[in-house]
Image 1 (tube, rainbow, N blue to C red):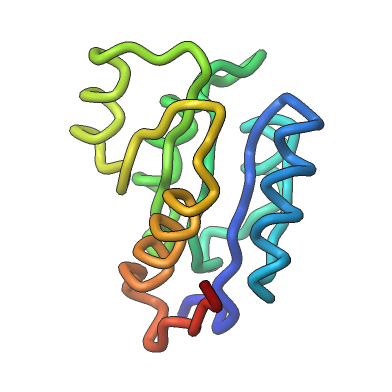
Image 2: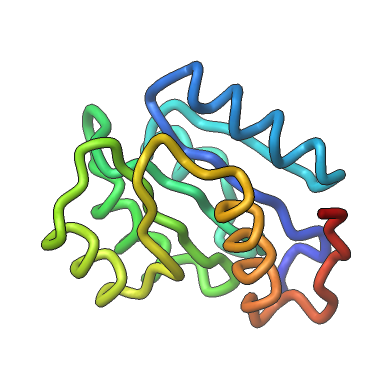
Length: 135
């Protein structure tokens, strides 16, 4: 059974990006948790959690694309949004082909990200209600 409170998870090795995204998400009155690495996320988040994961591609240790694969395999109630400052058409195509809701480039447009988070939370099988997001 999925956790009944969907959460937005931010996984990025850049502290400023994590802080900015957490501020944006929390301003929408949504629960948010941030992690500096893929391994920290995997160690802390139970497979029963529901929500949306915003993950950076280029991180030390496990890449965001590898984390996306782990999420797809182990977390049935999470959707992913992949982002990168070093994007390429190949990376974007791979992320979406592997199941990401979207691939976005940094710097992130706040309105685009909010819309994607809304879609990501609404897409979760474990989330029977989509939270109303003030925009």
